[in-house]
Amino acid sequence: MTIQTQLSTIQFHSQSLVTFEQDGIYYVAMRPICENIGLDWAAQYSRIKRDEVLNSTVVIITMVAEDSKNREMFCLPIGYLNGWLFGIDVKRVKPEIQDTLIMYKKECYKALADYWIKSKAERSQNPEPNLPLTEVQADEEALQIIVNLYHCLREAYEFAVLAHDVDHRWLKQSIDKDLGGHLLHNLNRPAKNALDKAKKYIHAKSERIMFVKGMLSLLEVPKTKRIANF
Image 1 (cartoon, rainbow, N blue to C red):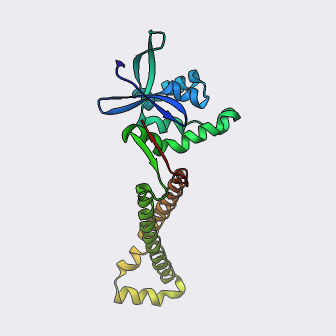
Image 2: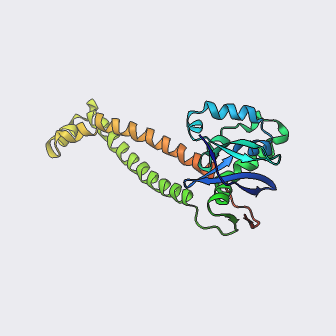
């Protein structure tokens, strides 16, 4: 859709970005960002239009340019900027713009959101606890409990397999008599199925934790303190 609204210009790493707020949603003009980074706007415009999710959030605003003529600006919600930016492969852009692209990627998660939503971005040497990191640590603790349970069940399963071995019939008979035949049954196929599912879950969860940690490493707070206001 096309709307008319009051625009704001902010400075981000000595570069101007155009922003505005509409119905409680903060938007950013995409062409200035592409030009600041050094990306071809026509190519990025086509890429956004091809993306069903990004294209569904596009807003076109009308602004008065320096020549007093109306100009349309193609904008995305700030919450979707990361999705667009991290879809750009650094290795596939011109070498001379790679550093700028990496800078935007590193800053985009935290700083840009602060610029629009909090009216300032402040980085200090002693930041507040990082919520995503706290969640990852909680996931790691839960995963460790699951791993311990997995190994305990694995030992019980191996014991059940041993009890079914022809050379240990006396053990199976003793278990059937004293503990009940259902015990060995549950420790065989049902336990094997549970172990297989648990193993897949542990691997998937471990990969996710490693991925999140890798992404959070991009957000490491610099040693110097920087405050930007607009």
